Amino acid sequence: MSSIYDHSIKRRRVSSIWLYALAAFFLILGLAWVVATGGWPAAIDRLSTFTTVLLGIFIEAAPFLLLGSLGSGVLEVFFQGEDFSSRVPRHPLLGAMVGAFMGFFFPVCECGVVPLTRRLFQKGLPVPVGIAFLLGAPALNPIVLVSTLVAFGWGPVLWGRIGLTFLIATLTGYIFSFQKDTTSLLNKVTLLQFQAERIHEKAIPPQRTWRQKARQVFTITVDEFFEIGRYLVLGASLAAVLQTIVPQASLLSIGQGQVVSVLVMITLAVLLSVCSTVDAFIALSFAGSFTTGSILAFLVFGPMVDIKSTLMFLHVFQRKTVVYMILVPLFLTVLLTVFLNLNVGF
Amino acid sequence: MSWSGYHRLQGLIFTGWGLFALDIVLSGKILFYINRRFVILILLTAVVFLGLAEVVLTAPRHQRQEENSDREPEHDHSLEAHAGQRPPVWGLVILALPLILGVIVPSRPLESSVVANRGVNATAPLGRLQNSSTTSVGIASTEKSVLDWVGDFNSGSDPSIYVGQEAIVSGFVYHDARMGPDQFLVGRFVVTCCVADALALGMVVHWPGADKLAANSWVLVKGPVSISNLGGQRLPGIEASQVNAIPSPDQPYLFP
Image (cartoon, rainbow over all chains, first blue to last red; front, side, top):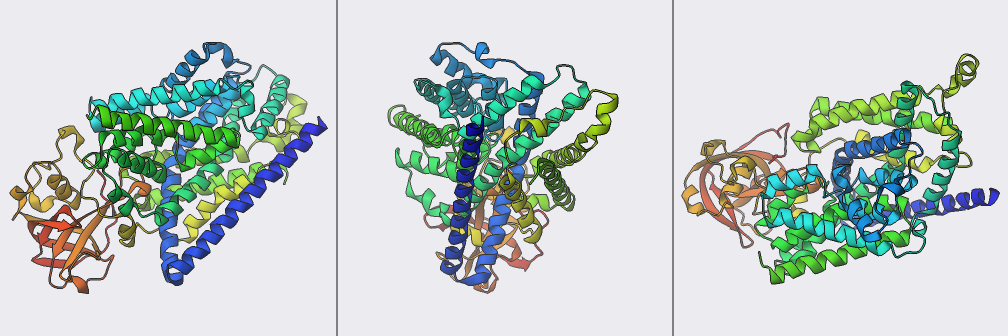
């Protein structure tokens, strides 16, 4: 027991070093920025823009993160002792397919999906299924599909979004199922927390009043919000900084080509870190001047990976796992959408 | 830090966020950050934040002793579940940071200087989605916004049908390096979700005193519409007969 405890302390120290490094990075970046852009008045102007964008992203995402945290609390309290591993097919490919479609039962966007997946892992959901859920659910859920339908109507963009998201989420989840011990994909701190909570779960008296249950749901909601929320803030800050550094104007003027347009729209999706519930309307403003494949890439890759969700993934998974969770969908998205651009030519 | 101190700070930060959100919703500053259609959601979230703060702050961990005596002890999630762990204090700091920034940095809408980075879009997000057409049919030309005009020019039909129509639009002044001294851009940001996705739209205004107008100041422009060009993009223009300074509006962005 004491060795586990020591280990947890060590891990914690490592993760706070990481945070100090990030803070130092921002500080240096900030100072370099002040020097490069000609003094303090301009810097204060930019600080105001940075704050506006940061708060914009955070305020917009907070309700959805809160909803996901609440879902996690409800799962914890009302599905106590439930084993979700028995609820999904044993076959890894079928399991991943079910995972990719689970967004229809848990309609969440990319902020809310992270605490929910974490809780499902704790309840025994196989990791590959959870990864397929994490990547698929932000786009494959009723709310997002309706907003895509409203924006683009019945057509290649809607069907392409459903098809490609399903395909990529399933394949990525399936690839992870080849790992022998899939729990090793998860972050060590998260695993330790699971253990602690499982021991604790057994100690809970089974009969509790509704009041007590509700109180527990809300306490977990708050804990969860703080746990994942810090990654949301860091991600939103990074997105806000990058938005002021990367000139979108020149980015958008680079490419209308079949391949380049896809890369540009993927970069934009990551940069904007837009919530998947409304990204279809944003994509619409580029539909006139960009290839259909690149619009699809924006709508398929954006909900899976952006700056804020990547940082939130790091809280749940090992760093290596996160790298693959980004690279595999990236590779598949580029491959498939460029293929569609070149061979279908909508 | 003890766990109960940690939970108290959690409650404090949630209270702070709840009050901050309520304040910007009630003062209307919320529209500097997000699209109008999400305001009700933020109001709801503010209330939930305050409610959750109440739950965390009034958790019965302090009166556990008394409760033990007469009924089943209320389950305390925090103490047992976190056995052997230290509270993640960094999370508190990080979640308080944007709140502190929001309080000390005065809220301002995006400024025209941001246009230099984001560029001017020639294509607008579709406005009236239910019509399946981009053109703002049925709106008097003098009532159309910058968003409407850019949408019209982008709708596929020949924009020459709009030439000569009288336009009255408001927006901020932006001086683009590619423009002459008698031209400026009357611009608006279009926000679909939150300011992170703001797109700059604009109309090229032909006006003799253009270079004397202060960047980022708000103007009301009147005059007939023309077809203009900016860096190879076709944009609607205005042969201004009148340019008047106006105060910046309460709702600086346009919402499609």
